[in-house]
Length: 144
Image 1 (cartoon, rainbow, N blue to C red):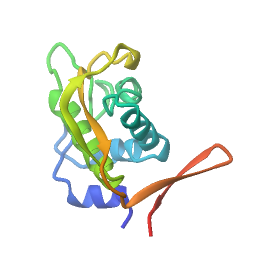
Image 2 (cartoon, helix red, strand yellow):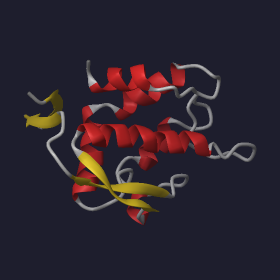
Image 3 (tube, rainbow, N blue to C red):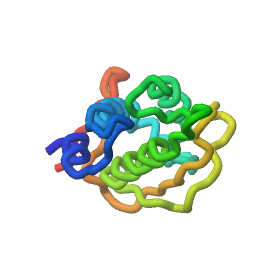
C-alpha cells in the first residue's frame, strides 16, 4: 500500500462538508514527491516542517476549498491547519523523522499568512520511503 493510500485508509478526518473529498484533495497535494521533498529539506535544515510549503497550501486550499486552511471573518478554520500538521507528521514518520521540538514559529521566509507554527523534525532512523532524484525529477519510492 502506498503512503497516501495508507493515510487515507487510516484517517478519520473529514472536510468542511463532512465528507472525504477535501481530504482526498489535500492528500493528493501533500503526498506529491516534490511537496514531501520540501518538508524533508526544511527538516534537514532544522526549520519547521511546513516552512517551504505553507504559503502554497494557503493559495491552493483557500476559503473556497472543501479543506480551507485560510481563516475567514466567520471561521478561523484552525482544525484544517491542525490536520495539515497531522498529515505532515504521518509523512515525516514514514521517512524516519521524529519531532525534535514542539511547535515553533514559522520563519518569515515561509510568507505564510495563516500557519503560524509548525513542528521541527529530525532524522531518527531509516524510513520506509526514500528519494531517488533523476534528471531533476524527484521520485518517492518505498525502501526495500
